[in-house]
Image (cartoon, rainbow, N blue to C red; front, top):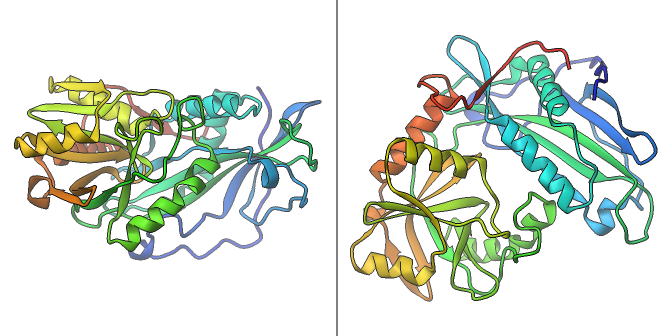
Length: 360
């Protein structure tokens, strides 16, 4: 796809928020990228436009049949002012996997990445520079055709919006309390658990609400068939360090193949730390704790990078991991990953992609 990206000037720029009050997903930059699809002409009219409300017909198919997918990645500003992305090509590929699963037309991955770079460069002043901060990037696609028949739509819209984000944990990583969910399930094999579709997250909110009411930060999801094998924690992948070996659930068609998950596995192999992708039951996790072998538990995802787990509750049994403190390995992974993302550490994997004025 070789289309020129139009630019529509905003009349007045927004006032940028104070870095100390950013949080996550609360503020949005001046511009967004937009592109449309029609079955007769394909993806067309790429443009960078002022961030603003969009208008859809009440009969737009997304409202009725849920064809909506998204991605999430971040841009970072180094101390020298260089702007960089972390493995963005993985997000572009995963976006197309999501498209395929929901019968949404494929996107030219190189073109979209180039458009995202151009948008970020336009909005470079929105990238916060405080410790642990970043610019969150949210590409998403949804069906817009006004029609109530049940079939894939013929019209779609792709948007990319930007949100300056604060440090997830403040000054230090804090272990969280996790509730093992047995009533509700996140996804089933053969369903859409391996892609980032909006409905996955809506379906998990009831269990999350229950967990929070009981004083827990997140849900540990079990498999839908046997209700015993660990899958994900909240919207993150999960890792267990058991007797010196790091174990994470094997991808099975209902677990999202996280970019951070893959990066953690590569990093551990680089360090010659034993790591296995395997089916692991919640019984095995609790048995390992009884033997004194459950050393660390942590989630891995784009927003937090690493989220240490300090407590697990399952069947009214509660276990505390590593005295409810961040483990040495969890801290090491976090330091290394964020160091690479911010350009403070060497990148032996060629994960970093620089952002500069580009022709797309």
